[in-house]
Amino acid sequence: MIELDLPGYVAIFIALALGGILKGATGMGAPVVAIPVMAAFFDVRLAVVLMVLPNLCTNLTQLWTWRARRPDRLAWSFAIAGGIGALLGTFLLVSVPARALTLTVALAVLGYVGLRLAKADFHLPEPLARRLSPPAGIAAGLLQGAAGISAPVSVSFLNAIRMERGRFIPTISLFFTAMCVTQLPTLIGFGLYDLHMVVLSALALVPLLGFMPVGARLARSISARAFDRLTLSVLVVLAIKLIVWP
Image 1 (cartoon, rainbow, N blue to C red):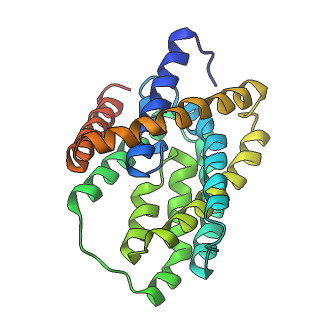
Image 2 (cartoon, one colour):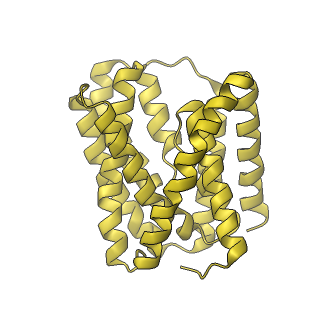
């Protein structure tokens, strides 16, 4: 990990605030924006490690909020596989060169943008989805553990099943919780989660939660299409920056 000065803390705050705005406006995960922003200024490992505890807290909160809607068999299969994948991905995080991790983040972001723009009308039947949930979960977990962004696989897989909101939220929340549960002790074992990082991760919840209402208000003041285009444009710029200017 690296030592941070005041500008470093400010950059992290801005990254987390942008992630909170996105989550408040669209319901999508904050790491999609926060991690590439932080990775553009620091070692990508810092971005991935920093987001684990906030992810765990926010997804446990969502599971509690939606506790009346218990995750089904597919959700558990997807989550357990995701936890295994995240464990393997964490080993990649600590062993793969930083430049390779940075490129992985950039490609994951571009993949996410591409899938959002494609808007493919693809439907995955439930029986086939149940069979594919373990490999899809492992693939998404690997991406999450190594790069901190699983949306190109996880969100695309669940969207293809066409889950209604009441099923989607508990499923994706259980998935992220399972990944965090395997990531956190593994990162502690590798010495990447010391007391300083625990405090920093806890403080990261402040801008995340604080700016979610800003995103909700922003979503009401501009069209969803305009906000989506703005978000995707920012992500493309960040991805290009990560590729050409590490």
